Image (tube, rainbow, N blue to C red; front, side, top):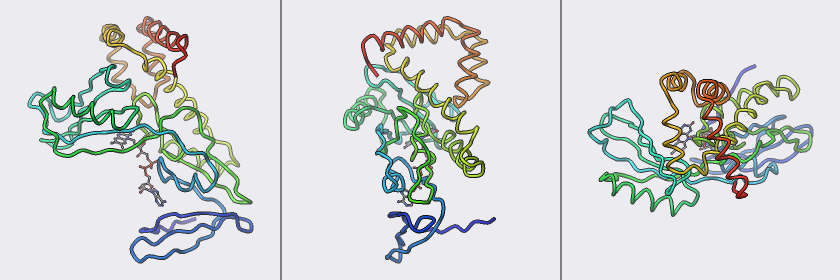
Length: 277
Ligand SMILES: Cc1cc2nc3c(=O)[nH]c(=O)nc-3n(C[C@H](O)[C@H](O)[C@H](O)COP(=O)(O)OP(=O)(O)OC[C@H]3O[C@@H](n4cnc5c(N)ncnc54)[C@H](O)[C@@H]3O)c2cc1C
């Protein structure tokens, strides 16, 4: 075994060739392309994965993220993240995350980029926060499990991370789930396709989708109701499990505060009866 890292190259295309795949990479600095041969190719090239496109996966739906760098307000400790739930602006949330002793990033996930950008501007004005710089990006919005493997001729192509839409759609975060996807692909390659990690990841992502379906139509009063239900033991449980352990977290929370389940169920059924996503 061993590995060779090749930097400064951009993947361009791949095609079936003999018993494997040839793929072309572009040399970014020097210019020109070079061809390489492999039996297996793993695409970890993000939401707009060129590996996925050339191997025949359909394009993923993505959500816009917009954020601004701001000076930290005086009342925000450097080790604290602040979030706001404002369902009229976004079914997700606004965040303010300190990134240095004096600065932080304030942003939101929206459904339309331009609208999200306008809302961010208005939010900054209302909070009297001066934007230093704006940033924008797109993240896949997980809607269903994306098969991570495809045969191209006699070669194998796999996807991991954002390229496979492995993003938990409650918070639209894909760092931990992307690493789990990478571990799962390694298992699948070593075990002729079988991977416990991928089965567990799929379950996790689907659970986040279920929670998102309930949260997506929460009104302000529902968030207030939810926060009111979080007594000390429920808060301790939230502190003990990460957001990447939704199953454990939800199970503990429902045991401690069964009304959380009722609240979620009601929101979920309301969304279904109105045929909303
Ligand atoms: C503003 C913002 C804040 C976020 N905050 C969080 C957070 O707090 N928590 C969280 O869990 N997630 C967060 N996310 C999401 C998280 O960043 C992604 O889910 C995660 O980075 C996905 O990792 P990845 O390696 O699959 O893809 P990426 O991080 O997108 O990496 C893909 C890599 O592939 C390279 N690449 C692309 N095309 C090619 C090509 N043709 N050839 C060669 N290389 C190529 C790119 O240059 C890049 O380096 C945030 C995203 C954004 C935009």
